[in-house]
Length: 329
Image (cartoon, rainbow, N blue to C red; front, top):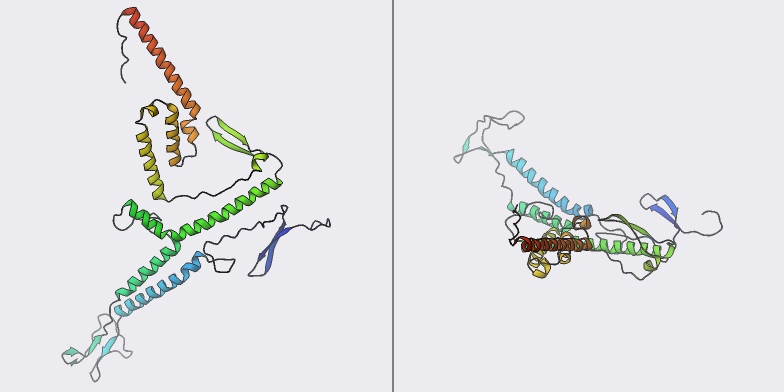
């Protein structure tokens, strides 16, 4: 479309409902794979477009509204019940037959009961509330959001194992949605990787924040051209994250009891890094530095202790007395 006599590949944006073209743009990276990656959390069988969460919940919400409105109508009828007048009795009503609060009515008795009475309307059935609770459960199953997952308190006391099992059971659909998103993201990233290998001509650079400041890392094109398998890592649920943190802290505490760990600063540094990673810290190097810095600190501490020992020996040889101990803070 640039009038050079050669066909170019273009991308057109088309709105299906109103049959209008929204725009177009030239696509300068022709490869075998198309640059489109559909993502449908709730797919339709044999359809490109899937369901939305609103479509999933529409029928459930409609049934809940019908059930709720029916109960409201029954409550209104019960609070404003009509009058029942027996045949053949005399009654004193207004011309329009109105019935209101504190109205005085003259009526005869039939079989020991007033000839005029309020119509008895049955109470709301328990099944109506049970049905609404069941529909709410259906909505939780569609969205995979129960009380603990949205930050609410669960009913009753449950162990961490039970809550994890409940969360896993109710989050099955959410896990499927996340897996579909992970697959789509993996396709996109690998597609971009193919474009980089095909069209990139200079070594890409990345800026990293280290303990020594900003550091520029360079990835060579030879390294980029290798056969790399790129995947998308998934996130765990909050309960699993908290359990992993507690287990990591217990592991670090137990490892610190070993003498070879206490005497080697590099071992302690790796344990500290493991603890920072368990808490999801991205500024680990700013917190604990590098392993080389830890080793250098241990060497400096050992040199200081050696100087102190030599000083104490020299003091004993000169005075024949024990050197004074430093006061404890």
